[in-house]
Amino acid sequence: MITEYVLFDLPSGITRDEVVAGMNEIAPRWQTEPDLIRKTFIYDPQAGQAGAFYLWKNKTSAQQAHGEAWRQRLLASYGSEPSIRYFETPLVVDNAVGKLITERQ
Image (cartoon, rainbow, N blue to C red; front, side):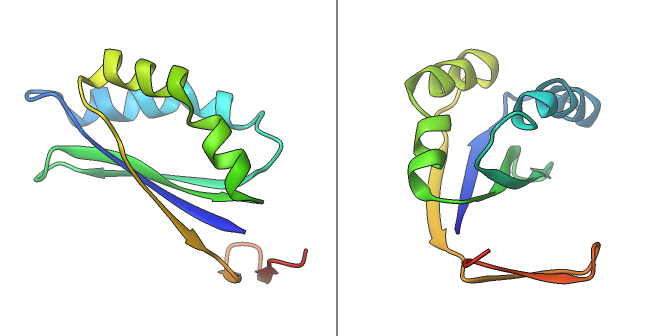
């Protein structure tokens, strides 16, 4: 599994309500990604940044989902380029469902 960390700058003056509305608007699109296990939206009002942690089955799927078309949409919507990092994820503790998720599942 791969954890992908995406962070981008928000335009000045954007409100929390606007940021959360944008998250809710795009959330259904991510429900259709077959190799996406989980997405956690993040927001830092003091830094003026937002993004997400994605848990993917593999890095190739993450990179395909965040290709040039996605980058252009983000740039058009928020006026900034994302910063992206990838981390190998051998184990996830999921207390919400009471189980461990391993890379072998």
